[in-house]
Length: 555
Image (cartoon, rainbow, N blue to C red; front, side, top):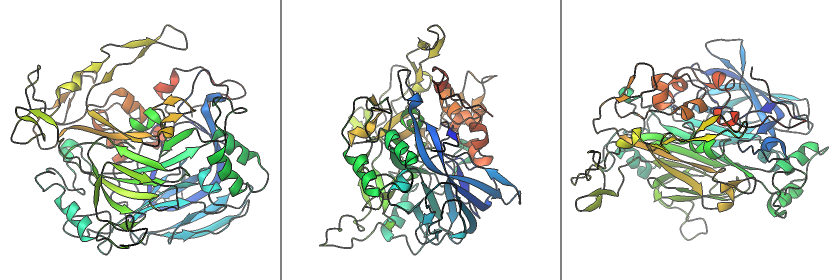
């Protein structure tokens, strides 16, 4: 293993780079405001420091060896200058609009044949060690795709050579925008998007609508790439001369015996023990506004989910039921394949569900797009029992004098109040524990329970995301005062005052707008340059790396 680079858990976790018109991808951090005109890709390897460092680890810091797509981009605003994007797994999300093209140069810095592949849009073919290929990506079809290395399937892809390629339509498919072009959107999907923001049960905004007064971005969407990593198996692949057998890889990944010693590389099993969504686990995923939707009632969002790995997930959202609008690139609508084994997968209609099977890449149902409508909760207490918030039966009055809907009084409630713990480093320094009780946070977790633990036992520290819901777009509220901002700055009404632990995850300056929503800087200037230089506070409270590893310098 070369281990030529060391990946720390960067703040946002994933960069987003945009081709051509750069339209419509507002809730992930664009690397810069200018669209890109050239991508240079190096197929390389790296160690990644996973989030789950434990002082008892014999294996230093829960690190894992990966293969990775490292990218440089040229911006239209600065021709001739290539900018490095910090290497990560998965690779940067690439966003395009139908009709966009972009030249790419792919260099293989590893010792086996590798490739860069997007079905129907680009295929480098096998690139030998040290070789380079020049191709052009052509965005032909709106939808969600996984770019990946399609050599030695599935080894190269699972080792980390994958990322998201999102193609937006060039225009609305009907009365309102959908994620698809006019020829793709079915009447059922078009009706759903036409009604978002207009129907009585979905008051608020259409998907493509923003609201500057409340810092609401248009085209609200997120990428969830699930993946599973095995430190022991991945290290063996890196140490093996020649090509690691796909049969051997899958057998060890799926069938190796469980080992209770998951902190010691020498003794641990080959089974995966890191389970990520878009490269993050646990707190770093669930409380990350780049991965986990954070919106108000009336701000519907789209989630693009893909499985780059080899395990089946059962993705369950504890918030609104969501609408499945595309499965494996097939936009849902009138059923086809009736009477066949695939009838339930091939366009069974726009299904309203709270759990969706996400199979390994290449199997049926390994990718889907879903709409979270951000509709009013159906169980608000009122004088006749329970009912939807905002219904004719107003929510009951609370002790504090507010009504149970919208839930606003929790904004200034922290649990535990003033709570601190002693540092595990010196046993004296206080570490704050208090967390804000609002907004309401609903988890998204995997009903395949094994993926909820990391390193064989750290529960709720692996594959978990969710949805945050704070107040309602259409209910007038006074501006919010944030006490820890100098001068008690007023934020726009109906705005979530972001705590420092959210803001620091993004490597953002503590401005009111960023504290309010966490994406303002991402929408304008990008955050990756700041985030790669930031140390996460939640990782500062830990011992130094044990030998032979050293703390990577912050540059």
